[in-house]
Length: 485
Image (cartoon, rainbow, N blue to C red):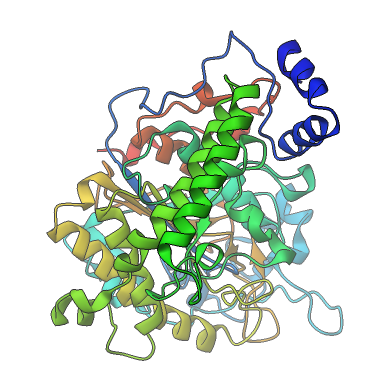
């Protein structure tokens, strides 16, 4: 797996050298050299439209019909079976027959309940574009002319493994793969040497549904995975805090020693880019201790800005801080900011199998104003043009009722939206059928979102391939060109 010179050098070091080689290989540091493969040089492949990405993910599965794809036909035919509607022919389609449990869930007695469930909230057209979204998103409705809503997403995992699939493009039964944030980190250079380039805010995915793999890098190497930050100026980076009993000078001496030891290893592996990246990560950890706390000092913002994000209200205070931190990180050159909302140690708070009205109204109240504030704040500062904001969730929810007042998982059609970073505003692209069952117009698998993000950053996914790692065609996706400005 590495050169003859390095092997002989390790052998000359005896057991210590062999142990070092084993540890470095285990951590993915030692790699086979392939002179025919040009690794990324940190530069875009073509002129980018965006510099940074803010990636929102609502954990649990947001109902597309009660958010960005209202379906009035559900109110018209509420309580009826599908056979009693003009859409009865939909039952003859194989994808519905084979997945009847998902489309029309069973009740507690195991009896099929193909009864359509009405919308649990009103909706109206917003902005000059006249795009209809639900009344649970009033603040985001004010930004509708900056959004490109994609209403025709689909995926293949009908359970919460779809959370990992949304971030990697692969079904969790196939294994673990690099996430979109890791690919961006791998392909592009740093915009700020004192901050990580791939940051994770909010509680990550639960172990049941991806865990750290939801912001991981897998075979790209650990140096490309997301760095979890806590929105706390006193302790933003738990694993690199010096502690109260340690002076900064003492810690600086420790990092210097660690750096010298790493560079001694570098003598044995002089051409190993990953080892150089490992050394840089230790140095970055030290620098972050002084640069990160300032990011979360929200008292430096004006009172009007803090109110804009909802920091003065209990329902929006926490997520408002998260969104304000995202803006401050973008200003300081962080490349990819991944934000989770709804992680609860299980499938996710948005997983409304019952009491959908109470569930979604409460959760939307937490995020609607902060997300809208972020868009408005970026726009007024001239940052939205170079910042791509993406909002998504693992799947939608069924048009049929579950348990009388909820909806089940629904991978056949759901909505996401994008804004800024060279994206057209005020458009709704693609469509589900009139009941919200299935994406029927301009259908997009989730990696089309990945491809769009990479394209706007000036990256060609096919030029990021790693030797020995064959990728499936579906992993690459295709940019959604109809929403590009």
